[in-house]
Length: 251
Image 1: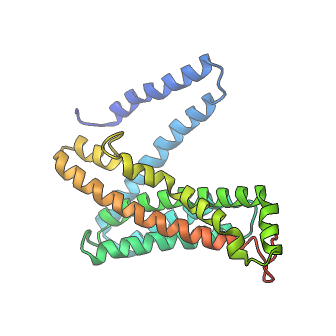
Image 2 (image 1 turned 30 degrees about the horizontal axis):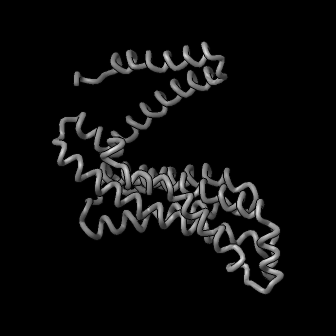
């Protein structure tokens, strides 16, 4: 692969232009979004690149912590947009994403899989937070829609003497499974259907395929841990919001 610079990025923009042209030809109203997303992603990623280079050079623990905190807050805010049918979605997302991230990164540090350096913590935290954010959003959405669609079944179960947990258990389990489905599919098909980003990036950068595979396996295990923790916590805290202290359904 040739050396990558701004000229290669500019040339690659032709691919985005192709997408815009195809959308216009087929009268699909996404041309402006593609154009805006193309420019915005470039600006955001270049800015992040300069910021990361500064953080890596300063080797400041506080800058690393601040970077992870900002990513966590933004991820929680994004996931909370799916919590339209109950209160406290942001704090639930913040807790679940933080728990998934801290436990997983803490174990990786304790097991000496990684060292406490910015070049490891920030990229891996980004992977974890983005995946737990998506898992939380799906869990929120599934819990809300399932309980809303099956309100009568839940209220009937409560009327028959079941606790709120018993009445909502299958919806909780289905929601958590839905939140995990993306990473579960990834674990089943990785290396067969697709070569993931981390692995592909390392190979393009010149690393041996076997080294890239081993790193990707670690990333996969890291994500299944963090997503499981975040989905379970998000589901546990979110579903409780649909019932009051008297165990009445208030969704």
